[in-house]
Length: 217
Ligand code: ADP
Ligand code: ADP
Image: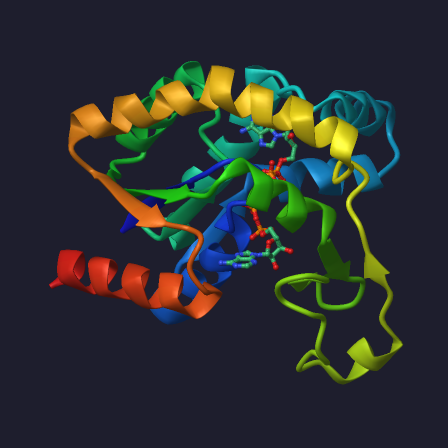
């Protein structure tokens, strides 16, 4: 089944997506990760994207649609995608439906992780990422522990360049203005599941596992 996971920056979309990937053999499509891959290539295109990400705005729909069609059109991921950080505005949501139809797929569930703004700020400023295995930790809520991969002993814990207080305010504003209305789009389709994203990480995933198992049976 295809799933979309919603929530403001820092809500726990990436953290929960990884758990769902493992539990249900899904494939994560994080537009933020795909954009950061482009930025790391240090091309002109990557530099342009980086400027937009630094301001907390949205990268153009054309760029995003290009990135996602590659994944949706790949038969090995048919009806097995968890969309993390996409769609982020109504046009992207409509485009996603067109693409799903084109490749004979459907969206089964839209998870909405709800978290208060003060907690989001702390989650984002405390987010650190392992330089070896890319796992995300949090210096306040989910302290970095040794990873499963041996080389992780030599890791650095990196912070995202947009995870600073100034950009966070803008990212939250972008979420309220552009992304929040997308929830209504999925509400009308009757596939929204609201989840309290302020619970412990595993309590949230347990709840999600139950919802998804029920849908699959
Ligand atoms: P998003 O992908 O929505 O931006 P992440 O999954 O990267 O969010 O989580 C943001 C930060 O908050 C990370 O540092 C992560 O370890 C931490 N985090 C995620 N879920 C929880 C939770 N339920 N409780 C406490 N901290 C969390
Ligand atoms: P978070 O969920 O913590 O906000 P992401 O990694 O999903 O972080 O996104 C980081 C940045 O990448 C966003 O602030 C935005 O600039 C850009 N971005 C990610 N996904 C999209 C998208 N679907 N459309 C436009 N811009 C995007």
